[in-house]
Length: 506
Image (cartoon, rainbow, N blue to C red; front, side, top):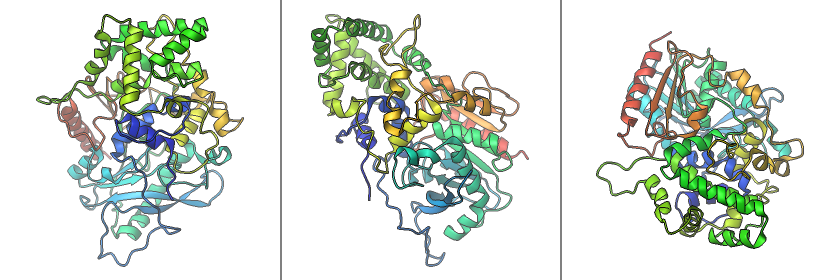
């Protein structure tokens, strides 16, 4: 049975679809803005409705009848690597079409998105496998897609969702991969095959950290847009957005005026502007203030310039076009833009932006709930308003404290929403991880590049850093991107050269 989660409807809405909008707290939405758009780009599939075989790993009637590469297999993964030895079914996809004995094995843990077989035939990991005679394996992250170690997503049941278990999932799978692959598709993985961890966004962070933690198992890693610095108060996000938007000063002016209005506590005036933004049904003023950020943030985070000869509009120019109406003050232009966005995408503001709903929905198949738990307990990543004198493109009411406030309502009083991020930064090195044979790739239009190895490479003799000035989040990685301009083709060429260089090393 598939239980529809708010995140799927929200994804359809943000991507321009016609989907219903279901209840989801705004702070949760802010925390997973990166997750939902990465999911859209990484998977190319927002249904998530593939059914798991009931209680079996996989049965075949002989290796002569090879299944489609889209066939899911089910690996017996340990529920708690540091406690119980009970197991759950973890979804795996495999493509061995290009594999030659001794060729590399590329492992893509899908991170905060459901595992998608689209990556078996598209995307940069597939390109690398084709070019190097490699096998490609996609592993679904615990608590996402169809890979659940628990029967529901109540607070106590989320305790097995943490970085230590996620990384150990990767190591445990690699240690047992030879037998698993032989039993499922009848192919022998050569002992000479070298493993390469790959990923985009959070899954890229896993690739870097897995390479650091298990250098005996993982020979190299390719990390696209990996936020390796864990930042609980991610105010730097807006600094990149501001540099990318020509109309940033108009947006900042609008936000400043809006904050003055909210400060006034003038109910009549506040309600008037809520109505102008088509957000009059939001009772909480902080929800109203926070609802204005998605459109600008996602425009920059997933920006791609129009292809040459294309009639497609430039999304940044299109957004900033709203602020060219000099007859209005910038706040009115922002209101017109937001109201049109809500109207055109059929967004129900209460369902989409309220912060007080969904806490007691413990059903499975809520990827957004899983990611919210990870932000509440380990990552933070709260995209907050910068403090003066830095320019703000979001309301001062959008603080990390406000965004983390629903954590206890969702997961219990022990989940404060103030994670010990220093633990992870100390353990894995933050922006200076002590690793080797890692390809760090970033688009400098990407706000998440502020938390990635994008400007200073820790050790250029052992690692490779590739940047694309006009590109944004995971554009080099994802399957849906066939563009070869604005530096992507050069980046992909350099990625392949780096991986080949690493594979030649012992």
